[in-house]
Amino acid sequence: MQEFGKDFDVRVYKIDETEKEWIINFITEELKKIEGIRFAILHGSFLSDLPFHDIDVAVFYDDNLSEHKQGELDIKLSVELTNKLSMPIDLHGLNRSSITFCYEVVKGRLLFARDIEEFWEFREDVAMKYMDFKVFIEEGLKDLLEIY
Image (cartoon, rainbow, N blue to C red):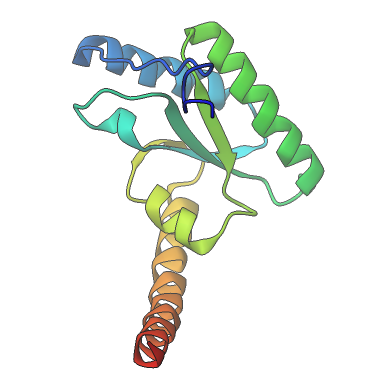
């Protein structure tokens, strides 16, 4: 039996606030260069004072970009930013993500928005859809618990 993590090197990073802000500004400026990105949000453990394994970034793309192109950009930008920062960057598009993922993301830190109203509308839409979805999850869970 193989031990988990024995052959899998997972680095843990702990940096000070000055370096953290430099990284945030660097990512923001790099993503602003991509015209197909409407807004970008930093989320996940990087925002806390705790050690982290990667930097989670979510972007919302122009509607005119195909899903294929969005997926290509997700990978390309993750790799480029990872190489430039020598830290793993986990970048995901929001356009095709689940409502539960989007709900967690919008709690993060907005890096930039080309149109702030568009961002606030997205955030409000996500919150409303999540609350509707949450009711079904809770009802389903309650029904499941009654069976057992």
